[in-house]
Amino acid sequence: MAKNGNGKTGRQKLLQRYLEGNPFLTDEDLAQIFKVSIQTVRLDRAELKIPEMRERVKNMARGIYRNLRAIEEDEIVGQLVDIEIGREGLSILTVNETMTMSKTRVLDGRYLFAQANSLALALIDTDVALTGTAKLSFKRPVFNGEKVLARATITRKKGNKYMIRVASHVKEDLVFQGKLLVFDLSEEVNNLENSP
Image (cartoon, rainbow, N blue to C red; front, side, top):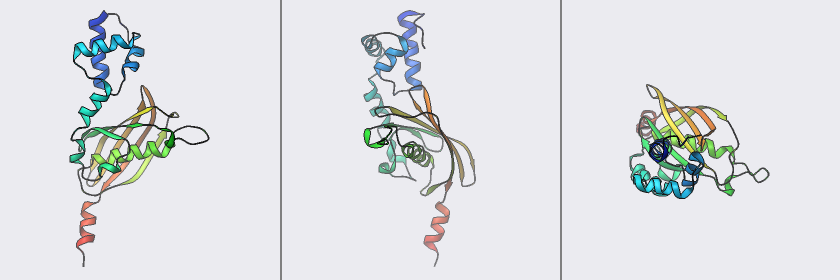
């Protein structure tokens, strides 16, 4: 937990660092972290000219989808909020009741994989990409109303193969992680389409 040791100035510096690391923290989340009122967080944000979470997400998302090649916007599971094609990206999935298992009310794991997989495909700068293998680990249950922040990073590229690591968090909790091997199949598909 963060400390208020340096008073307002120290808290505001920490607030900026927290939001740079996770722009999806709400005022309520920040109030809990800093053990201050929500109003104090709002005043700090106002002084620092930091918009509320909803506006921060909108600002990040503008224009991101234009650069995608291997996947269409409507195929992304979650909302793509930041991407550097060929390197790394972020998406956020807001869990609703239709995504949960009726008996347990826990998020169906398919959504966590689909979020990770679609984010991984979005990173590849090609017209055709396909996931070949995936090693997945589910760390804790996710519930209705929680927001899952997935961060994907290309860790290695060799020829037409990309190794991508994905880590998904709910606030500070790691809920899912995976390693995906994604193939750039544009050359193979092009050869098939142009063969007699």
